[in-house]
Amino acid sequence: MFGAHAALARAAESAAGRGPRTNGKAKAVLFVFLYGGPSQLDTFDMKPEIPRAYRGPFDVIDAATPGLRICEHLPRLAARSNRYATIRTVTHPQNDHNGTHFIQTGRTVPPANRGAANVAATNVDWPAFGSVVSYLDHQDSPTGQLAFPPYIYLPQRLGHYAGYDIVGQYAGWLGKAYDPMATAIPKQHALDNPFFRDCTDKELDFRLTGLDPLPGITLDRLNTRQRLLAQLESRRRDLDSSSTATRTYTAQQQQALGLIHSSDIAKAFDIREESDRLRDTYGRNLFGQSLVMARRLIEHGARFVTVGWDMTVRGDDTTSWDSHRELTRINRDHLLPGLDVGLSALLDDMGQSGLLDEVLVMTGGEMGRTPKFENRGSQDGRDHWSYCFPMLLAGAGVRGGMIHGVSDKHSAYPADLPVTPADLAATIYHSLGISPHTRIPDPQGKPTPLVEDGRALTELFG
Image (tube, rainbow, N blue to C red; front, side, top):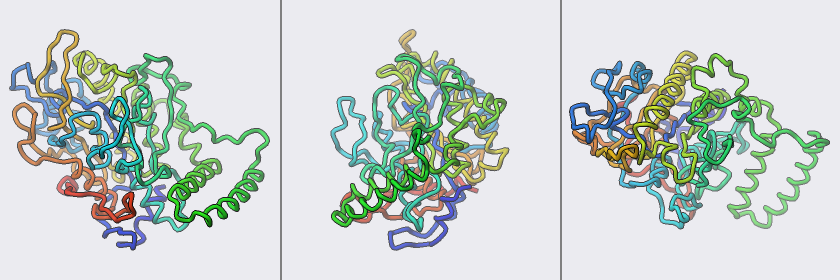
Protein backbone atom coordinates (compact mmCIF):
# COMPACT_ATOMS: atom_id res chain seq x y z
CA MET A 1 0.00 0.00 0.00
CA PHE A 2 1.13 3.53 -0.77
CA GLY A 3 3.98 2.23 -2.97
CA ALA A 4 4.30 5.54 -4.78
CA HIS A 5 4.85 7.42 -1.54
CA ALA A 6 7.95 5.39 -0.69
CA ALA A 7 9.76 7.04 -3.59
CA LEU A 8 9.63 10.39 -1.81
CA ALA A 9 11.92 9.14 0.95
CA ARG A 10 14.90 8.41 -1.29
CA ALA A 11 16.59 11.78 -1.02
CA ALA A 12 16.39 14.96 1.00
CA GLU A 13 17.42 16.98 -2.00
CA SER A 14 17.64 16.30 -5.73
CA ALA A 15 19.18 17.91 -8.76
CA ALA A 16 15.68 18.51 -10.12
CA GLY A 17 15.11 21.05 -7.37
CA ARG A 18 13.50 18.94 -4.64
CA GLY A 19 13.93 20.81 -1.38
CA PRO A 20 14.49 19.14 1.99
CA ARG A 21 11.68 16.81 3.00
CA THR A 22 9.23 18.14 5.53
CA ASN A 23 7.98 16.14 8.49
CA GLY A 24 4.52 15.74 6.98
CA LYS A 25 2.68 12.51 7.78
CA ALA A 26 0.40 12.26 4.76
CA LYS A 27 0.89 9.49 2.24
CA ALA A 28 -2.06 10.73 0.22
CA VAL A 29 -4.58 13.57 -0.03
CA LEU A 30 -8.35 13.35 -0.51
CA PHE A 31 -9.87 16.64 -1.64
CA VAL A 32 -13.64 16.79 -1.16
CA PHE A 33 -14.42 19.61 -3.59
CA LEU A 34 -17.81 21.28 -3.08
CA TYR A 35 -17.94 23.02 -6.44
CA GLY A 36 -19.86 26.29 -6.63
CA GLY A 37 -19.06 27.68 -3.20
CA PRO A 38 -20.88 26.66 0.01
CA SER A 39 -22.18 29.54 2.10
CA GLN A 40 -20.01 30.19 5.15
CA LEU A 41 -23.02 31.66 6.99
CA ASP A 42 -25.08 28.51 6.39
CA THR A 43 -22.40 25.92 7.24
CA PHE A 44 -19.34 26.42 9.49
CA ASP A 45 -19.19 30.15 10.32
CA MET A 46 -22.69 31.01 11.39
CA LYS A 47 -23.48 34.31 13.12
CA PRO A 48 -26.74 33.85 15.06
CA GLU A 49 -26.53 37.30 16.65
CA ILE A 50 -26.69 39.27 13.38
CA PRO A 51 -29.95 40.26 11.60
CA ARG A 52 -31.69 37.52 9.64
CA ALA A 53 -31.12 39.52 6.47
CA TYR A 54 -27.50 38.39 6.81
CA ARG A 55 -27.51 35.21 8.88
CA GLY A 56 -29.97 33.39 6.63
CA PRO A 57 -32.73 30.84 7.22
CA PHE A 58 -31.06 28.21 9.41
CA ASP A 59 -30.56 27.83 13.14
CA VAL A 60 -27.30 27.05 14.95
CA ILE A 61 -26.39 23.94 16.90
CA ASP A 62 -23.48 23.35 19.26
CA ALA A 63 -20.49 21.47 17.95
CA ALA A 64 -18.22 19.23 20.00
CA THR A 65 -15.63 22.00 19.63
CA PRO A 66 -16.33 24.95 21.96
CA GLY A 67 -16.90 28.14 20.01
CA LEU A 68 -17.68 26.41 16.71
CA ARG A 69 -21.19 27.25 15.54
CA ILE A 70 -22.54 24.86 12.93
CA CYS A 71 -25.73 24.71 10.90
CA GLU A 72 -28.63 22.71 12.31
CA HIS A 73 -28.59 20.53 9.16
CA LEU A 74 -25.05 19.29 9.88
CA PRO A 75 -25.61 17.41 13.18
CA ARG A 76 -23.24 14.52 12.44
CA LEU A 77 -20.38 16.83 11.52
CA ALA A 78 -21.11 18.98 14.57
CA ALA A 79 -20.76 15.89 16.76
CA ARG A 80 -17.47 14.98 15.03
CA SER A 81 -15.80 18.40 15.03
CA ASN A 82 -13.01 16.95 17.18
CA ARG A 83 -11.92 14.99 14.09
CA TYR A 84 -11.19 18.03 11.91
CA ALA A 85 -9.79 21.55 12.03
CA THR A 86 -11.97 24.40 10.80
CA ILE A 87 -10.33 27.22 8.85
CA ARG A 88 -12.78 30.13 8.77
CA THR A 89 -10.75 32.71 6.85
CA VAL A 90 -9.79 31.40 3.40
CA THR A 91 -9.65 34.40 1.09
CA HIS A 92 -8.72 35.26 -2.50
CA PRO A 93 -9.66 37.93 -5.08
CA GLN A 94 -10.97 35.66 -7.89
CA ASN A 95 -14.67 36.26 -7.21
CA ASP A 96 -16.02 33.85 -9.83
CA HIS A 97 -15.81 30.16 -10.70
CA ASN A 98 -12.26 30.50 -12.01
CA GLY A 99 -11.46 30.33 -8.32
CA THR A 100 -11.38 26.60 -9.11
CA HIS A 101 -7.89 27.26 -10.48
CA PHE A 102 -6.82 29.13 -7.35
CA ILE A 103 -8.09 26.46 -4.96
CA GLN A 104 -6.66 23.45 -6.88
CA THR A 105 -3.25 24.93 -7.71
CA GLY A 106 -2.53 27.73 -5.23
CA ARG A 107 -1.96 30.11 -8.15
CA THR A 108 -3.95 32.80 -9.93
CA VAL A 109 -5.58 31.81 -13.20
CA PRO A 110 -3.39 32.82 -16.19
CA PRO A 111 -4.81 34.92 -19.02
CA ALA A 112 -6.13 32.71 -21.82
CA ASN A 113 -9.07 32.19 -24.16
CA ARG A 114 -11.44 30.22 -21.93
CA GLY A 115 -14.42 29.91 -24.22
CA ALA A 116 -17.83 31.55 -24.12
CA ALA A 117 -18.41 30.65 -20.45
CA ASN A 118 -14.87 31.85 -19.49
CA VAL A 119 -14.18 28.74 -17.38
CA ALA A 120 -12.41 26.35 -19.77
CA ALA A 121 -9.07 24.77 -18.87
CA THR A 122 -6.08 25.44 -21.14
CA ASN A 123 -2.52 24.18 -21.56
CA VAL A 124 -1.10 27.39 -20.07
CA ASP A 125 -2.71 26.76 -16.68
CA TRP A 126 -0.69 26.02 -13.58
CA PRO A 127 -0.73 22.27 -12.82
CA ALA A 128 -3.14 20.99 -10.18
CA PHE A 129 -1.80 19.67 -6.88
CA GLY A 130 -2.46 16.10 -8.00
CA SER A 131 -0.62 16.66 -11.27
CA VAL A 132 2.42 18.06 -9.42
CA VAL A 133 2.43 15.05 -7.10
CA SER A 134 2.15 12.75 -10.13
CA TYR A 135 5.05 14.53 -11.85
CA LEU A 136 7.30 14.37 -8.78
CA ASP A 137 6.51 10.71 -8.13
CA HIS A 138 7.28 9.83 -11.75
CA GLN A 139 10.56 11.75 -11.49
CA ASP A 140 11.49 9.81 -8.35
CA SER A 141 10.64 6.41 -9.84
CA PRO A 142 13.75 4.52 -11.12
CA THR A 143 11.75 3.33 -14.13
CA GLY A 144 9.68 6.47 -14.59
CA GLN A 145 6.57 4.34 -14.01
CA LEU A 146 4.23 3.92 -11.04
CA ALA A 147 2.31 0.88 -9.89
CA PHE A 148 -0.96 2.78 -9.46
CA PRO A 149 -2.42 5.95 -11.03
CA PRO A 150 -1.32 8.73 -8.67
CA TYR A 151 -3.99 11.38 -9.44
CA ILE A 152 -7.67 10.49 -9.84
CA TYR A 153 -10.86 12.52 -10.24
CA LEU A 154 -14.29 11.18 -9.21
CA PRO A 155 -17.05 10.73 -10.35
CA GLN A 156 -16.43 12.84 -13.51
CA ARG A 157 -13.97 15.51 -14.52
CA LEU A 158 -15.18 18.78 -13.03
CA GLY A 159 -17.87 20.41 -15.14
CA HIS A 160 -18.39 17.52 -17.54
CA TYR A 161 -21.92 16.74 -16.34
CA ALA A 162 -23.01 20.23 -17.40
CA GLY A 163 -20.90 20.44 -20.54
CA TYR A 164 -18.06 22.52 -19.11
CA ASP A 165 -14.36 21.68 -18.76
CA ILE A 166 -13.49 23.58 -15.61
CA VAL A 167 -10.12 25.23 -15.07
CA GLY A 168 -7.65 24.06 -12.42
CA GLN A 169 -8.02 20.28 -12.43
CA TYR A 170 -5.42 19.39 -15.08
CA ALA A 171 -1.66 19.30 -15.49
CA GLY A 172 -1.63 22.41 -17.69
CA TRP A 173 1.84 23.08 -19.04
CA LEU A 174 3.30 20.01 -17.33
CA GLY A 175 1.64 17.91 -20.04
CA LYS A 176 -1.28 15.53 -20.42
CA ALA A 177 0.69 12.60 -19.01
CA TYR A 178 0.06 14.12 -15.57
CA ASP A 179 -3.65 14.86 -16.03
CA PRO A 180 -5.97 13.04 -13.63
CA MET A 181 -7.40 9.68 -14.46
CA ALA A 182 -11.16 10.13 -14.15
CA THR A 183 -14.18 7.90 -13.92
CA ALA A 184 -17.28 8.77 -15.95
CA ILE A 185 -20.46 7.92 -14.06
CA PRO A 186 -23.25 9.02 -16.44
CA LYS A 187 -26.50 10.83 -15.77
CA GLN A 188 -29.72 9.03 -16.61
CA HIS A 189 -31.16 11.96 -18.58
CA ALA A 190 -30.43 15.62 -19.31
CA LEU A 191 -32.03 17.00 -16.12
CA ASP A 192 -30.92 14.19 -13.82
CA ASN A 193 -28.99 14.97 -10.61
CA PRO A 194 -27.54 11.76 -9.12
CA PHE A 195 -26.06 13.75 -6.23
CA PHE A 196 -29.61 14.44 -5.02
CA ARG A 197 -31.00 10.89 -5.12
CA ASP A 198 -30.16 7.29 -4.34
CA CYS A 199 -28.40 5.47 -7.18
CA THR A 200 -28.51 1.82 -8.20
CA ASP A 201 -25.43 -0.39 -8.39
CA LYS A 202 -25.81 -0.46 -12.15
CA GLU A 203 -25.44 3.32 -12.22
CA LEU A 204 -22.53 3.30 -9.77
CA ASP A 205 -20.11 1.39 -11.98
CA PHE A 206 -16.79 3.14 -11.38
CA ARG A 207 -14.84 0.47 -13.26
CA LEU A 208 -12.70 1.92 -16.00
CA THR A 209 -13.88 1.16 -19.50
CA GLY A 210 -11.50 -0.41 -21.97
CA LEU A 211 -9.48 -2.52 -19.53
CA ASP A 212 -10.82 -5.82 -20.83
CA PRO A 213 -8.86 -7.07 -23.89
CA LEU A 214 -10.76 -7.37 -27.15
CA PRO A 215 -11.78 -10.92 -28.17
CA GLY A 216 -8.80 -12.77 -29.61
CA ILE A 217 -6.21 -10.34 -28.18
CA THR A 218 -4.14 -12.40 -25.76
CA LEU A 219 -1.48 -10.92 -23.48
CA ASP A 220 1.18 -12.56 -25.67
CA ARG A 221 -0.16 -10.78 -28.76
CA LEU A 222 -0.43 -7.55 -26.79
CA ASN A 223 3.18 -7.87 -25.62
CA THR A 224 4.34 -8.53 -29.20
CA ARG A 225 2.56 -5.43 -30.40
CA GLN A 226 4.01 -3.48 -27.49
CA ARG A 227 7.58 -4.51 -28.43
CA LEU A 228 7.04 -3.57 -32.07
CA LEU A 229 5.54 -0.24 -31.05
CA ALA A 230 8.48 0.38 -28.69
CA GLN A 231 10.93 -0.11 -31.58
CA LEU A 232 9.03 2.35 -33.77
CA GLU A 233 8.76 4.86 -30.96
CA SER A 234 12.47 4.54 -30.17
CA ARG A 235 13.29 5.42 -33.77
CA ARG A 236 10.89 8.37 -33.69
CA ARG A 237 12.36 9.66 -30.43
CA ASP A 238 15.82 9.57 -32.00
CA LEU A 239 14.48 11.98 -34.61
CA ASP A 240 12.78 14.24 -32.09
CA SER A 241 14.29 13.61 -28.68
CA SER A 242 13.60 17.13 -27.45
CA SER A 243 9.87 17.12 -28.10
CA THR A 244 7.69 17.54 -25.01
CA ALA A 245 4.75 16.18 -27.01
CA THR A 246 6.70 13.00 -27.79
CA ARG A 247 7.61 12.45 -24.14
CA THR A 248 4.01 13.05 -23.07
CA TYR A 249 2.66 10.67 -25.70
CA THR A 250 5.06 7.94 -24.61
CA ALA A 251 4.15 8.39 -20.95
CA GLN A 252 0.47 8.10 -21.79
CA GLN A 253 1.11 4.88 -23.74
CA GLN A 254 3.01 3.38 -20.83
CA GLN A 255 0.26 4.35 -18.41
CA ALA A 256 -2.41 2.76 -20.63
CA LEU A 257 -0.46 -0.48 -21.03
CA GLY A 258 0.10 -0.59 -17.28
CA LEU A 259 -3.64 -0.33 -16.72
CA ILE A 260 -4.35 -3.18 -19.12
CA HIS A 261 -1.86 -5.47 -17.40
CA SER A 262 -2.92 -4.69 -13.82
CA SER A 263 -5.67 -6.76 -12.23
CA ASP A 264 -5.11 -4.82 -9.00
CA ILE A 265 -6.12 -1.55 -10.65
CA ALA A 266 -9.27 -3.06 -12.13
CA LYS A 267 -10.18 -4.49 -8.72
CA ALA A 268 -9.57 -1.18 -6.96
CA PHE A 269 -12.23 0.52 -9.09
CA ASP A 270 -14.87 -2.13 -8.34
CA ILE A 271 -17.08 -0.69 -5.60
CA ARG A 272 -18.93 -3.99 -5.31
CA GLU A 273 -16.00 -5.21 -3.21
CA GLU A 274 -17.37 -3.03 -0.40
CA SER A 275 -20.09 -4.34 1.91
CA ASP A 276 -23.63 -3.04 1.51
CA ARG A 277 -23.70 -2.17 5.20
CA LEU A 278 -20.68 0.12 4.92
CA ARG A 279 -21.84 1.71 1.68
CA ASP A 280 -25.21 2.50 3.26
CA THR A 281 -23.52 4.59 5.97
CA TYR A 282 -22.13 6.94 3.30
CA GLY A 283 -25.48 7.41 1.58
CA ARG A 284 -26.33 5.73 -1.71
CA ASN A 285 -26.22 8.99 -3.66
CA LEU A 286 -23.38 9.78 -6.04
CA PHE A 287 -21.48 11.91 -3.52
CA GLY A 288 -21.48 9.30 -0.78
CA GLN A 289 -20.50 6.47 -3.09
CA SER A 290 -17.73 8.55 -4.67
CA LEU A 291 -16.28 8.99 -1.18
CA VAL A 292 -16.30 5.22 -0.71
CA MET A 293 -14.47 4.84 -4.01
CA ALA A 294 -11.95 7.55 -3.09
CA ARG A 295 -11.08 5.73 0.11
CA ARG A 296 -10.64 2.47 -1.83
CA LEU A 297 -8.33 4.07 -4.38
CA ILE A 298 -6.15 5.61 -1.69
CA GLU A 299 -5.90 2.22 0.01
CA HIS A 300 -4.67 0.77 -3.26
CA GLY A 301 -2.00 3.42 -3.77
CA ALA A 302 -3.52 6.60 -5.25
CA ARG A 303 -1.73 9.69 -4.00
CA PHE A 304 -4.21 12.47 -4.71
CA VAL A 305 -7.93 11.85 -5.18
CA THR A 306 -10.51 14.59 -5.76
CA VAL A 307 -14.22 13.95 -5.26
CA GLY A 308 -16.11 16.77 -6.95
CA TRP A 309 -19.69 17.54 -5.92
CA ASP A 310 -20.50 19.09 -9.27
CA MET A 311 -23.19 21.04 -11.09
CA THR A 312 -25.15 18.55 -13.16
CA VAL A 313 -27.32 20.73 -15.42
CA ARG A 314 -25.81 23.53 -17.48
CA GLY A 315 -26.89 26.93 -16.21
CA ASP A 316 -28.99 25.50 -13.35
CA ASP A 317 -27.51 26.72 -10.08
CA THR A 318 -30.03 24.71 -8.06
CA THR A 319 -28.07 21.51 -8.80
CA SER A 320 -24.90 22.46 -6.90
CA TRP A 321 -23.40 24.61 -4.15
CA ASP A 322 -23.62 27.65 -6.46
CA SER A 323 -26.70 28.78 -4.53
CA HIS A 324 -27.84 31.97 -6.26
CA ARG A 325 -31.46 30.88 -5.83
CA GLU A 326 -33.54 28.42 -3.81
CA LEU A 327 -30.76 28.26 -1.25
CA THR A 328 -33.10 27.34 1.60
CA ARG A 329 -34.65 24.39 -0.21
CA ILE A 330 -31.57 22.89 -1.85
CA ASN A 331 -29.36 23.30 1.22
CA ARG A 332 -31.99 21.97 3.62
CA ASP A 333 -33.19 19.06 1.50
CA HIS A 334 -30.06 17.98 -0.39
CA LEU A 335 -26.71 19.69 -0.01
CA LEU A 336 -26.31 19.86 3.76
CA PRO A 337 -27.77 16.42 4.58
CA GLY A 338 -25.71 14.82 1.81
CA LEU A 339 -22.50 16.42 3.05
CA ASP A 340 -23.33 15.61 6.66
CA VAL A 341 -23.94 11.91 6.03
CA GLY A 342 -21.14 11.32 3.49
CA LEU A 343 -18.29 13.24 5.09
CA SER A 344 -19.05 12.05 8.62
CA ALA A 345 -19.12 8.44 7.37
CA LEU A 346 -15.76 8.97 5.64
CA LEU A 347 -14.18 10.35 8.81
CA ASP A 348 -15.59 7.46 10.87
CA ASP A 349 -14.55 4.81 8.35
CA MET A 350 -11.00 6.12 7.89
CA GLY A 351 -10.65 6.80 11.59
CA GLN A 352 -11.63 3.26 12.56
CA SER A 353 -9.25 1.67 10.05
CA GLY A 354 -6.34 3.97 10.93
CA LEU A 355 -6.21 5.33 7.38
CA LEU A 356 -6.99 8.83 8.61
CA ASP A 357 -3.59 8.92 10.33
CA GLU A 358 -1.94 8.78 6.89
CA VAL A 359 -4.32 10.75 4.66
CA LEU A 360 -5.01 14.47 4.60
CA VAL A 361 -8.70 15.15 3.94
CA MET A 362 -9.51 18.67 2.75
CA THR A 363 -13.13 19.79 2.29
CA GLY A 364 -14.43 23.02 0.81
CA GLY A 365 -15.31 24.98 -2.31
CA GLU A 366 -13.61 27.56 -4.50
CA MET A 367 -15.36 30.45 -2.70
CA GLY A 368 -18.16 31.31 -0.29
CA ARG A 369 -21.38 33.31 -0.66
CA THR A 370 -22.35 36.93 -0.11
CA PRO A 371 -23.03 37.92 3.51
CA LYS A 372 -26.34 39.49 2.49
CA PHE A 373 -29.07 36.87 2.19
CA GLU A 374 -31.24 37.82 -0.75
CA ASN A 375 -34.79 36.86 0.15
CA ARG A 376 -36.61 36.67 -3.17
CA GLY A 377 -39.33 34.27 -2.10
CA SER A 378 -38.66 30.86 -3.61
CA GLN A 379 -35.64 32.37 -5.35
CA ASP A 380 -33.79 33.21 -2.12
CA GLY A 381 -30.03 32.85 -2.28
CA ARG A 382 -26.54 34.28 -2.02
CA ASP A 383 -24.16 35.28 -4.78
CA HIS A 384 -20.39 34.74 -5.23
CA TRP A 385 -18.07 35.79 -2.40
CA SER A 386 -14.42 34.74 -2.44
CA TYR A 387 -13.23 37.11 0.29
CA CYS A 388 -13.92 34.89 3.31
CA PHE A 389 -15.00 31.24 3.37
CA PRO A 390 -14.31 28.03 5.33
CA MET A 391 -12.21 24.95 4.67
CA LEU A 392 -12.02 21.78 6.77
CA LEU A 393 -8.82 19.75 7.24
CA ALA A 394 -8.61 16.33 8.84
CA GLY A 395 -6.14 13.49 9.18
CA ALA A 396 -2.37 13.16 8.74
CA GLY A 397 -1.65 14.74 12.11
CA VAL A 398 -4.17 17.60 11.89
CA ARG A 399 -5.27 18.66 15.36
CA GLY A 400 -8.95 17.87 15.50
CA GLY A 401 -11.21 20.44 17.12
CA MET A 402 -8.96 23.36 16.24
CA ILE A 403 -10.45 26.61 14.89
CA HIS A 404 -8.16 28.74 12.74
CA GLY A 405 -8.98 32.36 12.01
CA VAL A 406 -11.76 34.75 12.94
CA SER A 407 -14.07 36.46 10.46
CA ASP A 408 -15.73 39.83 10.95
CA LYS A 409 -19.26 40.19 12.27
CA HIS A 410 -20.91 39.32 8.93
CA SER A 411 -18.39 36.64 7.92
CA ALA A 412 -17.48 38.92 5.04
CA TYR A 413 -13.73 39.36 5.58
CA PRO A 414 -11.05 37.82 7.80
CA ALA A 415 -10.61 39.72 11.06
CA ASP A 416 -7.62 37.62 12.07
CA LEU A 417 -5.36 34.99 10.46
CA PRO A 418 -6.36 35.15 6.78
CA VAL A 419 -5.48 32.06 4.75
CA THR A 420 -4.69 32.30 1.04
CA PRO A 421 -4.78 29.55 -1.59
CA ALA A 422 -0.97 29.71 -1.56
CA ASP A 423 -1.07 28.94 2.18
CA LEU A 424 -3.32 25.95 1.48
CA ALA A 425 -0.96 24.80 -1.28
CA ALA A 426 2.05 25.02 1.04
CA THR A 427 0.09 23.11 3.70
CA ILE A 428 -0.85 20.32 1.29
CA TYR A 429 2.69 19.89 0.01
CA HIS A 430 4.11 20.12 3.53
CA SER A 431 1.72 17.40 4.73
CA LEU A 432 2.95 15.12 1.91
CA GLY A 433 6.59 15.63 2.89
CA ILE A 434 7.21 17.84 -0.14
CA SER A 435 8.95 21.13 0.47
CA PRO A 436 6.86 24.03 -0.85
CA HIS A 437 10.19 25.41 -2.14
CA THR A 438 10.58 22.46 -4.52
CA ARG A 439 11.08 23.66 -8.09
CA ILE A 440 9.63 22.20 -11.25
CA PRO A 441 10.25 23.33 -14.85
CA ASP A 442 7.89 26.02 -16.13
CA PRO A 443 6.71 26.11 -19.78
CA GLN A 444 10.10 27.50 -20.82
CA GLY A 445 12.01 24.91 -18.78
CA LYS A 446 13.02 27.40 -16.11
CA PRO A 447 12.84 26.06 -12.52
CA THR A 448 9.92 27.62 -10.68
CA PRO A 449 8.82 27.04 -7.07
CA LEU A 450 5.67 25.09 -6.30
CA VAL A 451 4.44 27.85 -3.99
CA GLU A 452 4.97 31.59 -3.98
CA ASP A 453 4.05 33.83 -1.03
CA GLY A 454 2.48 30.95 0.85
CA ARG A 455 3.09 29.58 4.33
CA ALA A 456 2.33 26.03 5.50
CA LEU A 457 -0.15 26.12 8.39
CA THR A 458 2.07 23.95 10.58
CA GLU A 459 0.19 25.08 13.71
CA LEU A 460 -2.76 22.94 12.57
CA PHE A 461 -0.69 19.78 12.99
CA GLY A 462 0.08 18.08 16.28
